[in-house]
Length: 190
Image 1: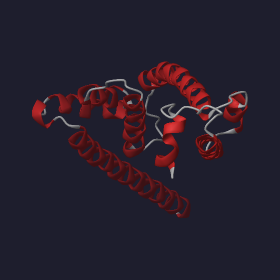
Image 2: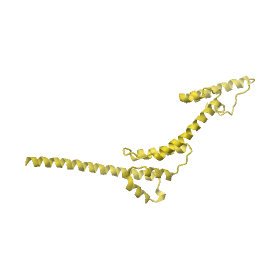
Image 3: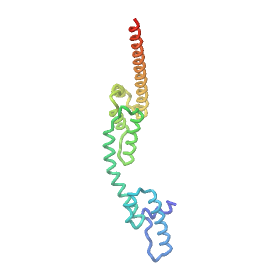
Image 4: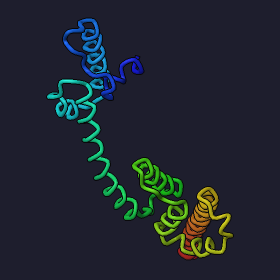
């Protein structure tokens, strides 16, 4: 159905002269269908901005202009957010890398070229300080193997090692505390 009426939307099929009644009826019907389809997918503020349009083609041009302006400002805002982004101590490695990959995809969708090397650099530079040794070790990885997939795999492994160390440290602290309490009780009994 959309293929049958898109020529009304993109302006390829113009409103016919009033002398051709059949063609005029078809065009009016197709214009109304196109308007209904597009309007049903718009948010209220978008609908309000195109209410003055008399044809679907005018509506389409206005929407394209609005979205192009938003896209241009989105590129700037998203680029700033991308470069300012830092991993929080509460973030997992997967959350951190996913956030950067999502911003990268959005920027690429808006036409901003971001290389894999730039994404890797961003991931590494925005890690928390507990990954400082990892960053140094990553520099020794063969450049051919410095991919996002390999980086993510190694970061996950490193994060798991941190978790194991924290668990061991916590268990040791609990054991020491329990032993200290036992020793205190023994001293009081004597």
